[in-house]
Image (cartoon, rainbow, N blue to C red; front, side, top):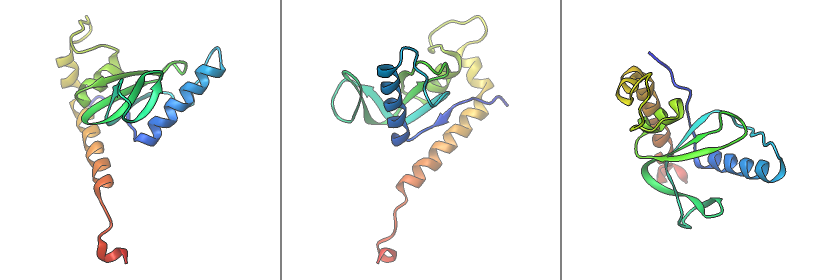
Length: 144
C-alpha cells in the first residue's frame, strides 16, 4: 500500500493559509509560509465571482458541492491552488505535479490510481467522517 502526503482541511484552515500567504507576500521578499505540505479543501472551488471569501485580487473560494481545491505549499515560499472535480485527481496533481492528460515516462494516471487505491480510499473515508461531524446536530429535545 502506498501512502500519500495529503491532508483534508476545513474552511477556517484554508482562510488561515490564504491570510498567511497574503501577509508573507506583502511583507517579505522571500516569503516563508507557516504551513508546508499538500492540502485539499472539499466542497469549494476557485472562482471569479464574489460569493465567498477573497483570495487574491479577483479570485474567490465559493461553496461548490463535490468540488475540491488543492493547495500546494511544499516549497514553503509559494501557495499553488487548483480546482478538481474528484478527490483522486486532486491527490494525483499534488503528488506528481501532473494533470491527468499529461504524459510522464514514469507512470500514467491509471497506473498511479491503481498503486494508490488504498490511500485514496482512506482519504475518502476521512472525508465521509468530516461530513458526518458537520451534519450531526443536537436534537431539539436535549437542547432544552
